[in-house]
Image 1 (cartoon, protein in one colour):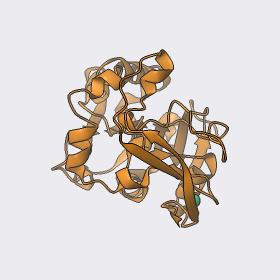
Image 2 (spheres, rainbow, N blue to C red; image 1 turned 30 degrees about the vertical axis):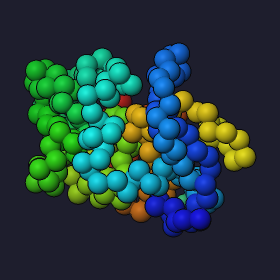
Image 3 (cartoon, rainbow, N blue to C red; image 1 turned 135 degrees about the vertical axis):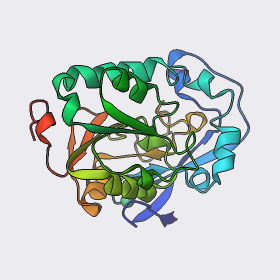
Image 4 (cartoon, rainbow, N blue to C red; image 1 turned 45 degrees about the vertical axis):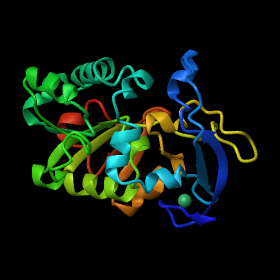
Length: 247
Ligand SMILES: [Zn+2]
């Protein structure tokens, strides 16, 4: 038994999977087993589920074993398709408001989303814990619009993530982020077959709705979900977003 990083509740072992379990298995792509067991634990109170041992890895180990040359084979959309799709979704939703937005793409990898917005006249920056590890994100200033697409499930320390967002977000301001909720996808006393629970993709922190609600409350945010995969933290909704977000 260990303690839940989100709420401090009791967390028990849920199941064990092979390290090479990847999200690509849902598309029928399987690779050889690594022979390395990865245990996921789940909080009895808030439902947060995490691979505790990997969460304690030093950063270099993530670079060596997960975000390495082979990573793109397990997440083929991360370099181009996903950041471009997300950039165009942001542009379509907030198209006429660029002049009043100071935007940060948190965990933005190589920065393609931010680069695309900048090409459309936005004031946008990117920061990624692996690509820009020597930069303290708090030195970037404050932002009234932060995106974090497919970031939350990768973080080993949810409180570092939340304190970054807290320090970076202006009031009024919004954080739009994506991560797939585990509710209905993970059950006690059943094998962990959910495709999203994949160590090879670096999916080590899996959130229930309740765990996100608790984190929001701990850091002074309001929380809403647009869908099981897209969510919002906010203080007050800024004027530029009011046409798109009704809460
Ligand atoms: Zn918990």
